[in-house]
Length: 340
Image 1 (cartoon, helix red, strand yellow):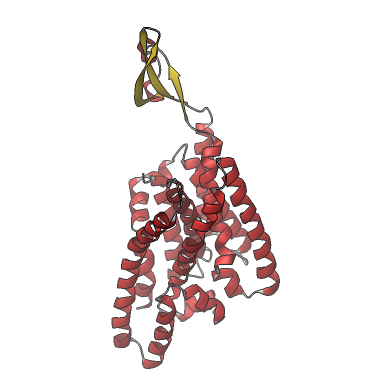
Image 2 (cartoon, helix red, strand yellow):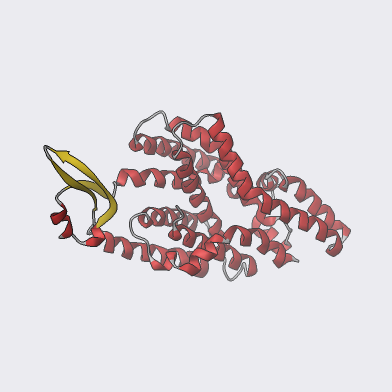
């Protein structure tokens, strides 16, 4: 079931990216909206795969088929339209650059082009290559290729606690490895666009998904007579009910909603984190992206987790939900429109 607060996070992310591409000097941290997309992808894909009892070849094939149907058609249309329009608008030398970028974009390896050819993303923003924004789709597709195998390892355990531990081990090892590679051996293009430098953000979403079940279920089963149930707060009673026989007398069995006293605190926390996320993406200007990237990643994960228990109107209203629904279309089309 679609969660409106997650659509709201998508809306914040796409607004940040859009503002950055429109005015990169004014909205210097807007590009970190992509980091929010990575955390959301890790969470959502983990939740999709967790529904399968067994991760065999047929399940993984179906997973890739669904991803293909969601991502590739619009992406292919974008590439086809740009391939037609570019010769009509740009000079021959620019067309050669586009054709080279297209060669990398077709198999979703635009991020590897940036790494191997040592492109600087911030310089490219001002040079305006048409397929600049395709790098993030490459990272996401490459994540799809490795996550089923990580999930398979995690399935060796039977509890959510074990799966959290499995993800946490991979998460920590990747952090350590990436820290050494990125900070001591790699270029800025590697740290920005390579899957190894981004895997920890996807796994943050995966860990958040597992933490939801560890934090606790919001429901408990209570068997009681119907007259007692009538005295309870209607908001605490779920729809589900059954019949149980105790001796010769049937008893109504209701699933009673546990109203947590910390819900108001969760909402206050969610609003605070959301405003912090908005401030970093839209208002803040820093000389480095390391700390803002960590904050954006952690804030996104925290909002996904708290949204499971208490959603806020700032994220779940109809406007934000609609922007989230069209975020993929906006992401694909906004940069070519800006350049053309």
